[in-house]
Amino acid sequence: MPQNVPEFEFSDNAKKVRAFVFDFWCEHGRGPTLLEVHQSTELDRRRIIAAYKELQLGIDIVVNEDTQNCNLLKAPPFSSFPSQVRAYIDDKFHSFVGCASEAVAFSHMPPFKDKTVRLESHCACCFTPVTLISKNFEMQSVTPPGVFLHISLSPYDWNNVDMSRMCDSMNYVLDAEHAEHYEKQTATRGILVNLDQAKMFVQNVANERMYNFHWKPGTLNPRAVIKGFKMMGVDTSAWE
Image 1 (cartoon, rainbow, N blue to C red):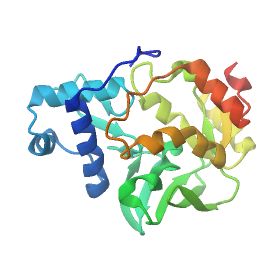
Image 2 (image 1 turned 180 degrees about the vertical axis):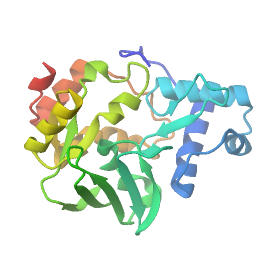
Image 3 (image 1 turned 30 degrees about the vertical axis):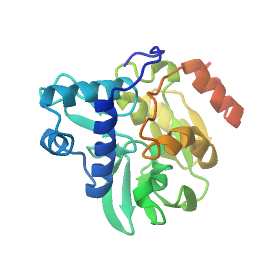
């Protein structure tokens, strides 16, 4: 998934598949199989896979294009595999969350309206448990208080292939000292984003996902991303 992809429009098939994927994941807590996509959309294998590739290019999902079944790995905020955040709906495990930033917007999805979402994670540095309680896109509580979102990968390296590496670089830390220790552990440098700023970061996507059937493909402009963080008051000097 190269950066600065020229503007394009999703096909009707891609929009149909996207809508089904999110509806299915919200209902079942996992991604659909190709069979389940076919049964809902009546699209054949080649058309489903073509739709998946469009959606990956538009930064909506992550698939393994080298597999014959084009395995569906992520449809943020969801992850098909164990990640750094687990989501519970009304105290029942629902799914793994794609990354720590997307977790902030989990409760904003229409099927979860008025439901209490508990997000279980940990400090990337020391594994101290971190619990976030969210409802209708509003954080109800954070334990321990003062947790930050830490992003240890420059936007210039986001989406070189797909979202996986970007998502992997977004974790919670207890404070700046723990962030520095984590950076030493991973030989990286990063930025600290408080949870209010994290909400601003994901808000545009969160307001489109499942609310707008014709939601346009995403684009990645590293300079614009960094400028946006600066406007929120985030110190981005580690990326400059």
